[in-house]
Amino acid sequence: MPDSYKKTVGIFMLLLLAAICFLIAKIFFPEFYSNTITLTLAGDVDSLSRYISSFGYGAFAVSLFLLILCNVFGIPTIPFLTINGVLFGLLPGIIISWIGEVIGIEISFHIGRIFFRDEARRIIEKKHMLRKVDKYSSVYAMAVARAIPYSPNILFTAAAVLTKLTTRQHLRATLFGKIPSVVIEVVLGHDLIHFSQHGIRFVVLFILTLGGFFVHRRYKQYKCGTRKQFF
Image (cartoon, helix red, strand yellow):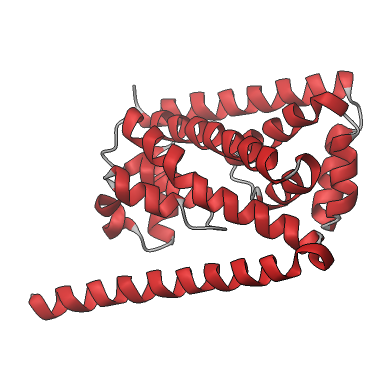
């Protein structure tokens, strides 16, 4: 199948999916998208949390749907990870967030690999990561990439599309890699909103996260320097 045809089919499928989701929500919950988009763009986490909780027992399904939708369309999921910890409690919020992230990433990965390889290559080239694609062709390397908190899922999904990872290998990397990043993002979001109660834990985890970023960056610089000296 020619790449141009694949791209056309992929765009059609995404538009069809978006249209179906929009119509279902519009029929049963007419103000769902307008309220969600308005509150998310406004950064009003409290109101967004209250709105999702208004769905009662269906709130967890709404949260999963939003996480999956955001990953498929390359939208940051940070606001929804933040409110999940507040809305459902830390442990349930972490589990729901992890499930939503994994499903959304896997769907995005398969759509990208089948229909949008050229677009994935352009994203990677734009971020000057094309030479590093082979580095992510192992389960360990991709899991480490997925484990970085607040990293854009779409960037590493685009890289995964171009790697030699099999479907099963990518799933394993996502399943294990998203655990630390989801835990950190949910807990930090929860503690930031309830800072008066969990301020110490927030500060400690925030410092540890920054320290992890620093150590990881220094390690990468050290490895690059060692290779240059060697060669």
